[in-house]
Length: 307
Image (cartoon, rainbow, N blue to C red; front, side, top):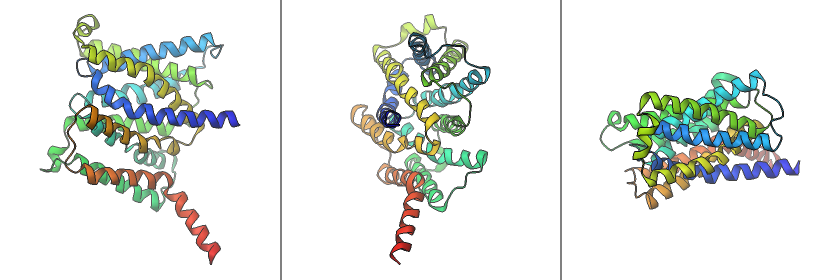
């Protein structure tokens, strides 16, 4: 039990820190490389490495079942190919920190999908957090002119990626996946990477003409995403299997802090006009939706005890 708890803590730390920085490195990678080539290459190599390690360590002793393969196919494509892919497309025109702040709405969307798909009730405290957080996102996206022009195509791609990622997170802990996280993550990444490269070949130039034009800066970004992104996804898949989905997405509280610091300080990105007002609202909303109900119940119990 102690080993499992320690692994969960390490997994949370990895997801918190690594994923907070991935938006910055996605921005680097897509500067001169087509977005779905970034997705295809990083997950193909990462998935192949995971499958190789699972074979070498004996984790993959037999072929996964058809249901496990199907689950990996669905989750891999929703989480990585579509979820991460659309965010990567968006970062060609959207600042990395801004994409991170929109994706910080993941807990709100997961709560929505949990209610629609599994009829999980949304207490008043969590509903308040959802409205507070979404209001913060709206303030940050507002360009000071009008609402319609604030919702650019790039922002639309981020929201689309957010939807696919949240949906997969919601259904992930209900699906039958391979019991070994290394195998499960490897299969998901291989599916997403392979389909991403095929998709890129059709959408963009063939790989042998597209990649020679890629800058060293973008290659560094891709290398970081391939190595550390794979570690982060392994930890995320482990948490989806062993932890409640609404707790797993608590990474959304920490990730925006790291992403904003990297984007503004190292990426020299321009802060949104209402960032100082919207950012705190997002963080307050996240705390309310993740922990508000527990805090509210504890206060009520204490109040009853004192009376």
